[in-house]
Image 1 (tube, rainbow, N blue to C red):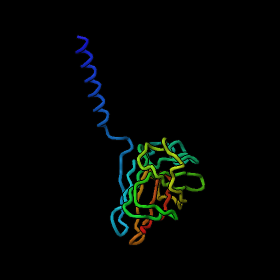
Image 2: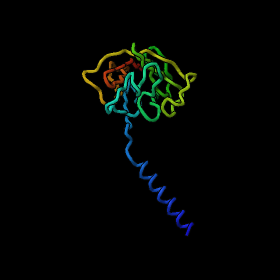
Image 3: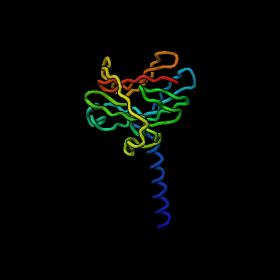
Image 4: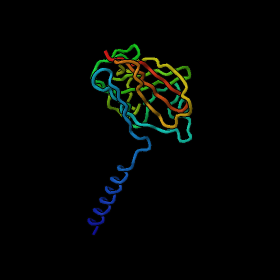
Length: 175
C-alpha cells in the first residue's frame, strides 16, 4: 500500500512538472537575423515586458550593472562570418551579448562564453570586448524589449536595442 501511494505521489509530481514546463515563458524567446552579403547572423534572446515596472535604470536593467540584455538565458549572437561591431573585431563563432546601462549611455559587451544563464555566471575575464552604443529615444514607450537589425548597406547594419524610453544602437559590418 505504501509503495503504491509513493508511486502515485511520484507520478503526480512528474505530471505536474511536465505541465509546468509546457507553460509559455513570461518573457518569450525571439530571434533576429540579418544577412550581410553572406550567411545570416542571428541573435537569440528573450523579450521581457514592462508590466508596469521601471526597466532602464530600475530593477530590470539597473544603471551601473551588467545586464543580460533580455531575460532567461544570456542573449546569444551566432555569426558564421567575421564581424566588426562598433570598433571591435569579432571572429566567426557564438558569443553572449550583455549590456552595461548607465545614465550617460550604454556599452555592448561581447562575451566569449556563449551559453550561460542570464548574467549570473557572467565573467568579465571572458569578454572579447566592449563597445559604446549610440543613444536615442523611441517614438513612444516600448513595452516589450526588442532587438532589431536595420540594414545600412550591403555588408552593414545597425543593431538596435529598444525598451521603455530608450534605444541603443551600434554598427555591425561583415569583414
